[in-house]
Each structure stands twice: as C-alpha cells, then as structure tokens.
Image (tube, rainbow, N blue to C red):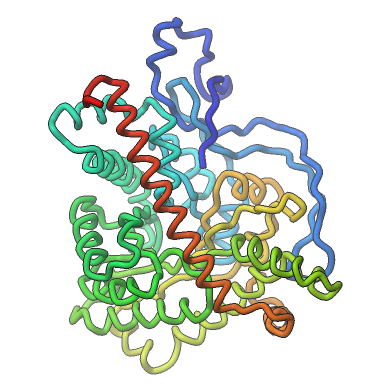
Length: 443
C-alpha cells in the first residue's frame, strides 16, 4: 500500500518550497512514482529448492507509489520488465494499491501495469491518512449521507476513475485485461444472498465494463459466485488459500457461465485470486514447531509449491469437452491471479512470490515492494510449470510431516476475512472521527 511522506518528490512534482505554509496544509495527498536510485538492502537468501529463488542483485531503481503532500503526477518511465512479462510470457502485471489522485497510476500504466486490485485494507489506508478525500466527504455528509454510504461514494469514485484509465487496455485486448477490482463488504463473507445483491448493486453503480466485483471464496459465497457470473457480471474471486477451494471456485465459474443463458459469453470474465505469501507465513510457523532438519528445510517452499499445483489444476479444468462447449460461445478462461505477493519474511528473496510463478494466462498483482523488486532485477521466464514434480514432492513431504492443507486453507481464510472486516470497521471509525473533526456530525 502507499506509504505516507510529507516530503515532495523533486523529480516529479514542485518542491515543498514552492508552496506557502498555508497552501501546503491544504494540499491533497497524492501518489507519486519514485524512480530515484538507491542502494540495495542486504538480504539473506533461501537455500535449496528451485522453487525458492536465489538473488543477490543490487536494487538500482525504486518504483513505488507513495502519498505526499504536493500536487502533480509522476512522470512517465521507460519500457520495463513488466512489458516483457506480458508480451513474452503472457502474464499480466497488476498493481495492488489505489489512492488519490488516481491519475498517478498513469506512469505505472506506462511502465507496464495492466490492472489494479483494491481491498478494504487498501482503502482504509488511503482514506484515513489522506486529505484528498475531505472535500467529497464533506459534501456527502452535508447532503445527509451516513458514514458507510459516504464510504462507498468515495470508493466508487476511485474505482470509476481508475477504470477510465485502464479502459484503453481493456479495449485493446477485447476485454481480456485492464480491469480494476472493488470488493463487496467483508461483513457479507458468510451471507450468500446479500453477497449476490451487493455484487449486483456495486456493478450497476460503478457502471464500467472493466470493473471486477471481488467476492471472497468462502463456502457460503461459492453459490454467490455462480449466480453473479450467471447474471453476466465479471468477478474477481478473492481469498483462495487451498487447492480444494480453488477447484470449487472454478466449478462455480463454469456453472455460472452455463446457467447464464447468454449466447455470447465473451464479456463475462473472471480471475481467481490465489494467495501466496500468507501460506508460507503460517506453514513456516508449523514447520518450526516440528523443528526437525527436514521440516526446517521446507520453510519458504509451501506457498509456491501449492501455487504450481494450482496452475496444473487450472490447465486441467479449462480443457476438455465441457470447456470447449463454452469456448464456442465466446467464454474466456478464469485466469489465475497470484495475490499476496509481497515477502513477509525479510530473510527471503524479494521476488520470491513473483519470479517462480510466471506463466501464460495468469495475473500477478503486486504491491509496491514486490513491483519495485521485480522491475529492478526480476527475470522474465516461464517458471510456473518448470518443475512440477518438485512441487508435488514438496506438497507431499509437508503432508507426511503432519501439515494439514485443509487446516492451512481454512485458517488463512478465517484470518483473511477477519482482517478485512477489521480494516473496514477501522475505516468507518476513522471516517466518523474525520466527520467529527470537520464539525459535520455531532458526537
């Protein structure tokens, strides 16, 4: 997510000294792309396993978006490895962040970013720490909007504005890319029917062809996914942590396409967001509790091994007579999207959850850290199925050590849902405080 800085970025915006003290205090926070050179931080690297990459490349360029207290957009950047990632290997690099002004996504688009994902945590950070939303928020509350309604107004405006920026990519790819994702309320994760209604409501409100409505892959929401797809609404299915749940998500997509009754399925698309780094965070803790040399040697390998097997499942499910019948009606594959790609353990290579997961018809959505690292020293090559047998071996070895993949999936899903609920509630609290500070709502 965007980091907050009160300093200007001289290369891309007027310096702070160009503003008077009074004007500085009233400036909206903006997202600036920082391409300044900086030295590399030292990093410890994983040992063994082709699925855990070694890297000792110095970081030469910083490609991050951060909120600052000045106006102005970032400048364009030259061709990057992100262009090669898409053109040579068929993987779409997306950006996992969104804040105002949305026009600061333009240099990222020029650098090769082809879509945006958002979630309650991202908006919690953007809205609660920035003054860029104050004017609209003031108008909304003065017009009688309650706090949650005002929240959705702020979010939808950002999504609509971002959709406009990515619409050329959507058009150029005939609806295959250029999407912006917005999530239904995390409070609905256990509510099948209201998730359906919320998805319909958001889709109608945003009213852009390249919006993805995000629905969590909880058991109660699997039927929601089918129904929303059947209604012709494109979906980003989020919070997938296990192979079993991923297969259920694919089936919901296929069932929805078949139930739609549409003669042309080409405009109903989907991605399945398979989370990566969080898997290692949990499994590593379990391996450390086991404590044997064999267990400790498998740290940092579970997530990518499971992801490689997910890609095998993807290839299997989107082939054969059932799928070919849908293709004749224009159906597009539900692409695998690698989410949670930032490294949580500083001992691991900074491209660990990007570089080993490159493959055709996939998406990698990256926050600042991962995006910056891959642009700087990422290598573009098909890796997702380069060593499937090793992935199978790691997956089985973990099972033999007592790692219950079902537990891992359900626990991470629970944590993910609760985390988004917490961010959502925290943001509403922050908005209430902001309303109070603006003297718009009585305590």
